[in-house]
Length: 412
Image (cartoon, rainbow, N blue to C red; front, side):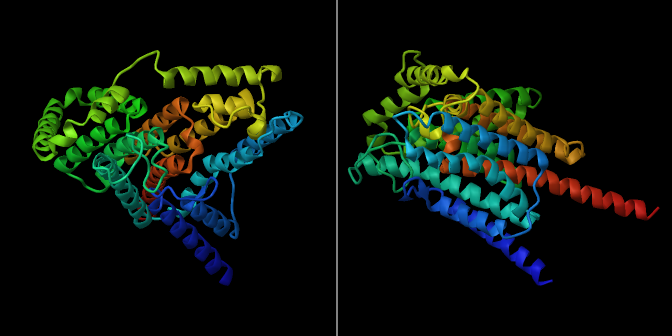
């Protein structure tokens, strides 16, 4: 009995610390190198769960173990190099979050009350970070803070912009909001339209193309869906036009005339194949492939043996660290997540949720082909939480429907 109470208490601690990790997500306060407040709370939740009797799926354990064996073997082979970077050890923790976060979240979201509370936290954090884009811009324009024209997370070094991470987060959560949050939170058309307008403008102010690219892809998906619901599409268009018109009167002309607006817009909304960010991503990919050529591309040089710390691309950094074997193992893990969702999708209320899960999984995969932000806690934590919440919803629906079916059978 006391053992059961202890396990329940550990799970409660894990749930509370995950909530705190999400609440502190906007604060970019570095405590010890890569360790920030959300990392501290994640580590506490891992310790809390580790004190309980945990059950692991065989497939997950095999993929996790194989991936880390490849990483360690890659580091071992490159250990004779002169340019070993021991700070790369931190990547072992960052890669672990890909596996650990879904596991923790799948064990702590045990009822609809917790599910709804996590959705509310995710939405409020998203709202805060959308609003912060405008606050940052106004503060900088008026000389109250000094920093890069492109936004950074609150309490960052504003001279070193992390707008790419910011844009990636906003675009992914924007899709999550319209696919899931607004329906769970019962937001109406006006509320949703305001979120749409303010998020799109915020994405432009980040000066990053990544976020707008995701919005374009999502818009294409929405247009295909709404081809049979033209009235809904027209209603949204009218509401958005109205909000934009009102904003043009409210927003001070000083801000609209600011030169940075034009610069940020041109940077985020125009495509130039000679752009330095596009060219650098291609060059980093070529460098990563060249680095592991001596290993026949099968394994990498490991996080400590890689020649660069970052490679500005998700595929590039995995190849540099673990080669094709590591890449294939991570792809296998993503496929396993998809299969886990699909096996519950045959229940009629889960079919739409499974499609939402698949869309968001695809969006996040695409984002991290372009970037390597899944190795940054501020990016993977909210994404993993969103996907885990939807998966938990699918599973809860399935369990509840099974219980009802069994009850009806017993009445026969």
